[in-house]
Amino acid sequence: MRKVITFGTFDVLHIGHVNILKRAKKLGDYLIVGVSSDALNFSKKQRYPVYPESERLEIIRSLSCVDEVFIEDSLELKGEYIKKFKADVLVMGDDWLGRFDEYNDLCKVSYLPRTSGVSTTELISQIKKYN
Ligand code: C2G
Figure 1: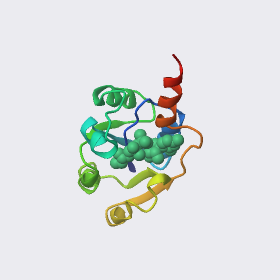
Figure 2: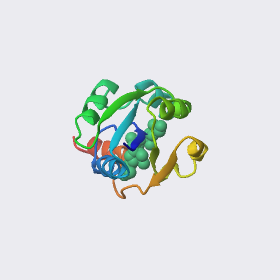
Figure 3: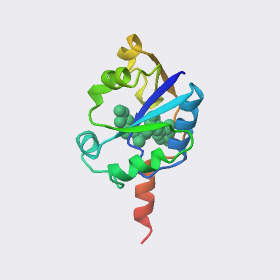
Figure 4: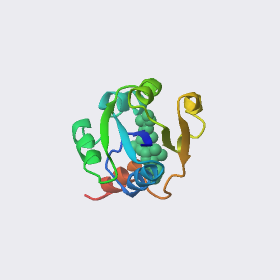
């Protein structure tokens, strides 16, 4: 069984998130998703996600292409997560191109193209315009 692991916040779920998860699953048989914690998100972006981690975890768990989920507590723990889940492939969007090449020693690292024209940040600013 070929295991694929990927990570993300997946706040305000949109088609770009679904596309990357479906494509990640196609690279193997079993898809594990590390959902970034609220605290990790705050440390990265200085704001909390719209949906709390418990809800983001449950939403991602409910997708048919996802087999297993867990909370990602730190960006620096990727190597530990890859070993713990015995992942064969690490998938990230190409906005992270080159950032995780160090894990090539542990598994294959694959960057997939982002879906253009959609992002959580753009959705939030669009929603703010609806009064
Ligand atoms: N994504 C995509 N297309 C978009 C938007 C996002 O393919 N239009 C991908 C990203 O490249 C990422 C995944 O969807 O691989 C999740 O995106 P985010 O929720 O923005 O996650 P991010 O903040 O990049 O967190 O440990 C890594 C980080 O936690 C990733």
